[in-house]
Length: 110
Image (cartoon, rainbow, N blue to C red):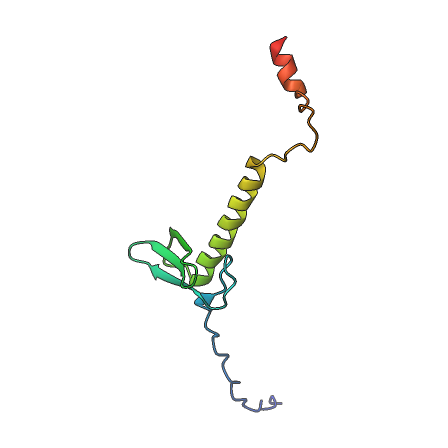
């Protein structure tokens, strides 16, 4: 006995690639679509510039790097700088009493 013939199906419509964004919201001035990214893959440099507040960021770029990658690096760098600033600034004491000496400093004197 022979097999049943399979009805031929036409391939479905191919999915179109959605292009990634190249303009973004600025972290500092919060303007929409004010940050543009320029990729120079031959030189290996990517530059990010806000047209409103003139905030700038520069990073290394490879042949795989996209504008979204540079924007996310900028966000990470801004968060890291903010964390360093918080650590560097010590909270001021509200009382007039001097701050207690840490235990590690006392043991060094002995």
